[in-house]
Image: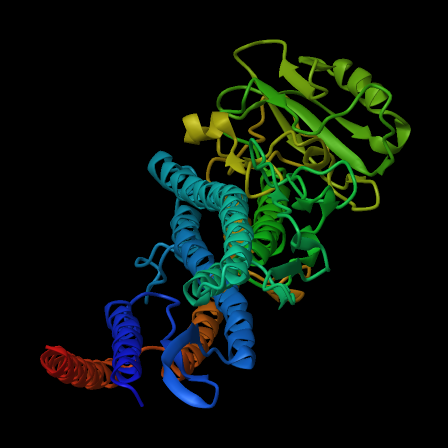
Length: 590
């Protein structure tokens, strides 16, 4: 071997070692970089005509277990969904307040209802007490206000989820665009014979980011390009990038829903005009849709069940009573017209009484004699001292013609329609609360402003009462007793999502609602912790197989430095030999 050949071999070794040192240094400096994998420089011997001619670096690559990467990506989808569910259900649980060990502690619905029950219990002993009426009305207002606030909070969470869907779609699109850009760079680098390892790392990181938001499938083409598809098979990245499209709703209420077919309150998540909302699989984007369209509406349904049954039960009792002094006007809450059919039986008593509850006039009406609401209104108009009409909102209005007197009604044996409600309840003439759902339930405004209008008296139903006789008793506890009994007694609740059909008190049903949400939140936390642990385990396995081991890289760098020094010394020796040989040749010629 000539000195020149030996020098070239030493020089090529130095150059190859220098590249390997550079790779090792990059490994060390990027050890903490997310998605970075250990790089290795492939070194090969150069042989010319069967004679060793040095060494060269043929490429820089990293080794990633394809099966492990696929498992990690699938785990990312599940973890993304679990994290989103845990976050939102924790917020949902906080809307319901905290439970306490006694009726006076805690802020949950059950505790608030228990406070109302306690106020009614006190009212039973002194049903005409102004302060106790005020306490009862105030406690009821706390109950219905909490129902409204919780309902509003649920809808706010749905609105937040909808906006998060729009943001997540934007994030997914950014990662898809990055994958498309990296595909181009990888193909260009490969064609130029350059390393693509770092670019592939970046692309895998972007792919994992997409997978954490929605389920995807993928494969790498022979040209090195990565193609990505949604769970339903819609291309997200192929020869071009196909972005997701979504427009958030301007407002979100309990009536705002998603439908794959128009009309729909929420728009669909589309790719190339194709709606994939119901085909997202797992991931945070899919979970946000589930929360917005299923989980949170189910919570709203539970609240609505409580609110509607509470309104119906309280109004059924309050319709049997009247305030003392009696109100000069009663306005119904039901919407009717003069032509609305009246399918009713039994007798109802309408009376005019003075401020002390003494009878001014009255008449018992046989409801089977009237076929429409208009017929009934005309009959009421015929009672001395009363006027009746249907206002522009479709509500029956009954007033005393003398402003110093008031109106009192006893439902007696009246029964309207298949439900068998008394006439007063059917028309909503003496409701205690208004509204039919958790979003709009409220104490009747005039009672909230003036608690003396809380009807705890009952119009005398005895036969042929005499004018001037007291027909409204201030000392009767019947209505207060009935209200208390209705609250603590058994009420039938139909099955709703998360809670089966049951018979219980209102406080117990409220506790069941809170418990249902708490259970969901606890399960979501457990699921997230489990999914996160699995993903962490897979990440650790991936890191151990493809990540950077600082100790190994540091030792390798030290070895390479020694190799570089040895090659440099060899080259120096060869240079000295060549110089000595050149001097000898020059001397011989001279």
